[in-house]
Each structure stands twice: as structure tokens, then as C-alpha cells.
Image 1 (cartoon, rainbow, N blue to C red):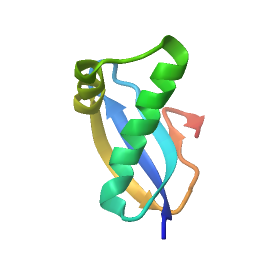
Image 2: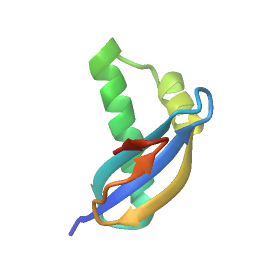
Image 3: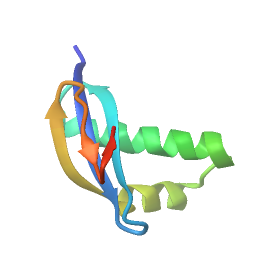
Image 4: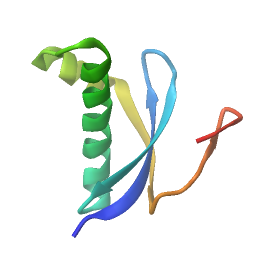
Length: 80
């Protein structure tokens, strides 16, 4: 059974903080699901990514925290 999590990451290259709501079986898997959603959005926005580009995305996203449940956050003054 999948649970709901809110994952907060920071892009090391650009300093962008991202908050995504995901579903995963365990909290430890929530970050992987989060990264996959970021990659999927990049593909939607700009086309295919090769394996090295996908690895770069994974390496650039620093996990800040994982909250159990879908929640709202204020990040840099913006309500996410």
C-alpha cells in the first residue's frame, strides 16, 4: 500500500527549493519517486534525457526532508 509524502529538495546547481507531493510504499522511497517526477517533468518540458542527464538530475537534488502526508509549506515566502 502506498502512503502519501511531501518531499522537500534543493537543487545544488541553481539553489531552487522544490516541494512535491508523492506516493510511495516507504518514506525512504519517497525521494526516488520525487526525483522521477522531476525527470518526467523535464522530459515533458524539453524532450528526452539520456542516462547521464538523468543521473545528473539525481545528483543535483539534495534531500532536505520528507514529511508523512501531503502538507502545505511556505518556502522563500511562497505557499507551496
